[in-house]
Length: 491
Image (spheres, rainbow, N blue to C red):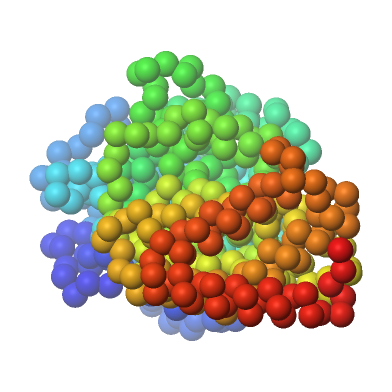
């Protein structure tokens, strides 16, 4: 986090702590507040909600140069702190509060464009938006009363991180259940006019607001990725679900193309750090993947720092989060392959040094899933994923050779990593698996052919550098001898 401070928006946030892991025990710690502090939080938090409500209810954007129209940073912080009290949520859970937050996010600029996640102010504002939106979604279900009963239990009072993680988890499970069970009617509740307060009746979702929010997240995607990395306990399931529903109902015209592309980019980045498995959303997820191929943006040049953030997020998912996060299941080869497919377009000039550690982490998961016993069959989905990963390895090794800016030492490091992790033996393990299941034919379209071509392509890339070629030849020979000398290796 930078030491620079903006007059209105607080600290500038340009980096994240790569060692951050969400600590459930710390989040569940209860804080002690004096009666005076609690009274102040109720007063200031309530005032902030009123201001957001008024901002969302206004048909025009205010003059932000007028200090009286601003919501000061300390007031936003007070509102976040106020949210430790369950009584704050019914007040926050209002579409006008959500709309007010979107207007605030849009007002935060840097270098002439929206960049709310560059500042502490934007981080607080988005956390408030998520609280408000998640509670609104909860109110549309028949589970809100049960959840509030749980939230008011003594063990859930005055938690260090408030009720946001608990609410986010409950709403995420609600959305997942609707998607898995095919409840297509749930979204209709978002668009019907309902009484949210005595003075306001309207729908939860205005497609115009959702499009505006999507574009904000996309335009500030580099800093949004930093926010996601440091706040992954705030699951975006309800927000992404809503964005998807709006996108799915948006005609694919030239005029709507920017919004559709923006949503696809936001969705893909969110997959890298979101708890759970991307594909569990079924046809909705597959629809987005298909759309992303049709709507690939060829006009945008890659930002090296942005690309590194995406790749490091993937690495964090493979390593830190898989090993330590209580919210993320352990990475498997199929998950590594699926996420790497989305990351590959970001691997360009300036990112080469990240390839060797990426190879190391992935190959270890492949061995972990395949197992060391060559005669014990591996699940078909694991074998398929490993073949896809070999194809990705071929692409990465060829990229290292193609990029003139890549140092020979990086190519050497990639080759050294591959052979240290027994890449040749892994190739033989997979090939044997295919023979054992009757898929060992080297037909052009068969899995054995795809695997062999990928391995040959990777090896050929390593042999294009003299020093690396010598290393690759020696290690490949050694690995092959080790492979055929195994007692359980038979063809």
